Image 1 (cartoon, chains in turn orange, blue):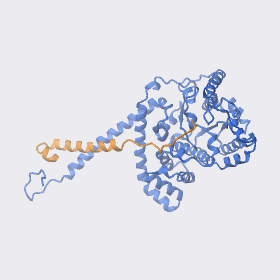
Image 2: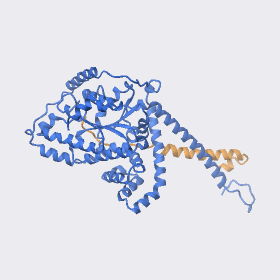
Image 3: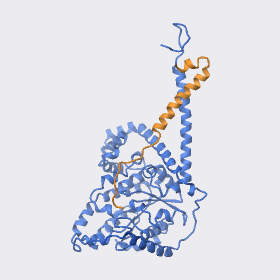
Length: 48
Length: 420
């Protein structure tokens, strides 16, 4: 079942649902890749 | 196949492309507004809580660019680049001493254990335009100048891809400087692991011929986008790191005291007491004499002359000059007692100060080498390059004089100028 079928009688709702669907994808991508990784290779400092 | 359509066979069906494009554009617009809002929130957090981040040594501060740029942009903040001496919890440590801006500014230390000149270079190079015309203090650990090669693990553990990219793509810096820096960076392949654009940039900057310049021109748009994403991530990381901080140093609490002069003599007596107390607690083992006096001079001088840290530090000075920054270089003394026991006499030890003075003079960078204290038993907190309360007293006084443009009349700076 796709959005067209689900909202066959409500074209406005179909547009909103489709936009929300894409928004969810974009937000998921931002959450997955939005945070930077500033870690470095570990090293041991023995002079303390 | 269920198309969900009620149209008759053969009749033209509405294209699904347009509704999808419209939905995608709407989603991107909403996401764009959310990211822009998040960016504003992160900048506001940085502005509000920068002073809370001063004593912290999180990845966002050490390997990002946002917090260092924010600190450089503030007239009430002086950035101090150093190494492991910034970490131990010692009374009168610079960041704590200036925390409430007793004379009108606070200190923002940047660096952690093993931060050699190449790492400092990345941090400065990633500072962008904020470095122009700004005062910065560099604290030197003489220990780094006593080994021929930079410890790869130290450098890799302090390296930042974003800072390096920001430097390499900054038009302010000359091709010659970028090439010399890139040559050094490529000696440590681990620092470009998993980042093809950084590796590609370094390799083509090193080649520097017409073909490489053309290739760099071609990838410039991608590299710009890559850095933009990196900066955005960096801003969010900085804000998340600061978000955990209590708002003790928010603008309403942080009130720099203008025109206030400290009683440095009283502070000196306190620092000496604290240093003596620390020294007693440390219970350092006595230095074992391994060679007769002066028998290791030649070897010491030869090794020091070959140290890679010299050429790396010269790159830092070149960068500062090209950036138009105003640096103050402070070098802590050598450990005279340890070196004497290893057969290194004062004549050989003087070579360090002489070389340092010649190098900094070449770039008009003021240098304060605290050589007078190489035999002071309480200047350091241990037998490494970690200064104690007394050492910090000298640092703090110099930093205060430097910030207030009193370096030319500074008693501590004058004292060190007599010495090579």
